[in-house]
Image (tube, rainbow, N blue to C red; front, side, top):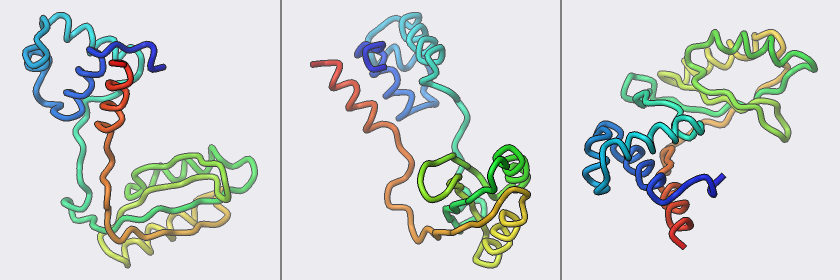
Length: 160
């Protein structure tokens, strides 16, 4: 997919990732291009599905949910849709991904404390279609979710 991009696309994407509130006019000024050019690159990135949202990011810990865990979920055969419907009803389950390996889903959950985590785990295991779970509690986050290093790499590769 990298061949679809030009260095200016990556430069715009990098600014968006690093300073999403700056706005297209500011991106254009920093890159030395017309505002319409910067806007066309933003539109292109959205059209290609690279830029999927302008939603703000939130820190659950700052909202009182300092407990974080990853839960591996094993499902009963043919019960994926039923299980996902049930899991969507658990507000503390903030992400679920289908995975290959020993489990079927890898879910990220938050809780206020260990007792809250236990409640969330009990809710997950009670969902129709869930056969078994295993949990890994996060002690600390060493690298927060990020995209800028990947954008820089793609930009550098396009410059070669």
